Length: 269
Image (tube, rainbow, N blue to C red; front, side):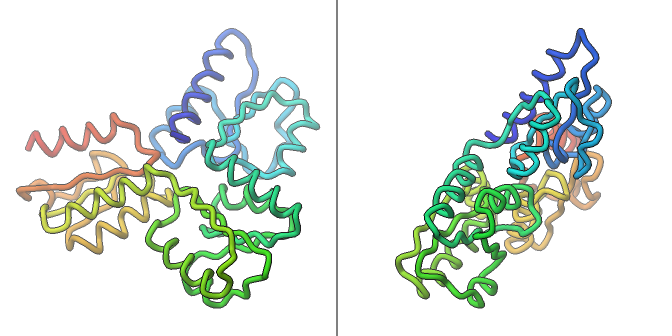
């Protein structure tokens, strides 16, 4: 949902800008899919990193599904940019929770990838009261304060989060847990596991920098000896064309047309 919303926001910005010359930016890569990003680039959408110097009152800036920091929003406001906020509603909720509970004096534990845009955005909302843990090992080493809440990245591994919750709760059973993992993420993982023993190989389609796609590939590799992570149909390994049954799954940022192309290419051989 968040990914589709972000892409639709970019399309709206392009449509609205068809008759004038406003600059259109996204705060970081809009989604983790090279083909989509390349298409947006050709149509004039530029990617901003940390430097906002190119942004002015004639600029349109799209906040991607991951969200952004409080400081960045303030900086954009000071430059009078037109901001189109495509932050995923689930991420927005986590941001609000982090801000609310931090204001009450609670420590905020965030389970997620430390450098992921979503985690960084949630941390900023919690001011200096957030601690990020990436796995069970981090949870085991963590001192849990009496007043603590636990928030999770929307694309985090459901299995890993369950283990983390168990460890954190063993240290403080009163910790408030908010499970905001996207249902699409959980459904893809569960559906993928159903392929175990049913296929000769599994293709995971998605951007190689996408967190949820990487986790799908990890699961695929664990249940099948022949698994590959590809970004498009041209990257299908030759051995997959010799298999009788091939399983296909895809990351949240993978457009339907790319999945269709992979399926069609396999079926045509």
